[in-house]
Amino acid sequence: MLVPIHEEMTRQALDACFSPRALEIIIAANRKQDALSGQIGHNEYHFDNNAIDEGQHYIIEQRGFVIAALLSPGVLSAWIAFGRLIHSAQDFYAHTNYITMWLDQFEGTPPAPPEIDPVQKNLIKSPQLHSGKIYFPLDVLYFVPLLRRFSLALLAHDSHGKMNLDSPKQGARFEYARIAAIKRTVYEFELLKNILTPELFAKFTDL
Figure 1 (cartoon, rainbow, N blue to C red):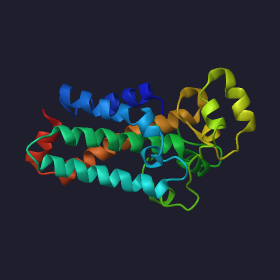
Figure 2: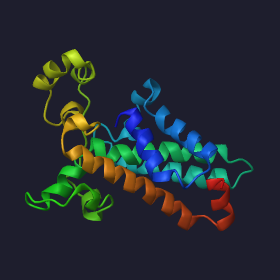
Figure 3: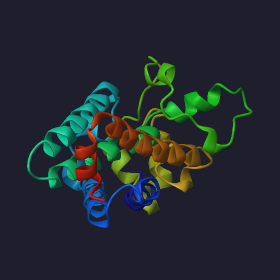
């Protein structure tokens, strides 16, 4: 998703969960995943190029880094790892066909976006789950507004350009992806809450 949308979703999901200083560091780490250094050679950050298993492993890895950092004297690394974690978790809904598969279950009469289940196991484990492939240079041209129509006319149906739900411009499915990403962010926070001791959780939230 676009950087401002990542920030907006993170604030909506976590505003009451962390101290202001912790939340700003988490948001900064989330945003940094979309820097150029995070876009090249890091499909796992964004679930691009069908890096489904790699992306899921990356989330688990970052969760482990959060816990390890909290067991050390500092806390900064825990907030940074959590920001990286939730960026990938949020991008899962914008870059894969999870939203499409969830909607297809309802045969044309889907529930409203707030009803979406972001962790439906049979969909997350489905062999049909895939993400958009990056086709160079056309997927780069997609990000140039004046060349977007040209790019889309030539891109394959499984391209990032045609599959992404990165902004409201992608249509009605974007709102499902946005709400699923917010719910998943809360889910990841609650998961750590259940894992951590009360002392470590208090350290993590900095409240």
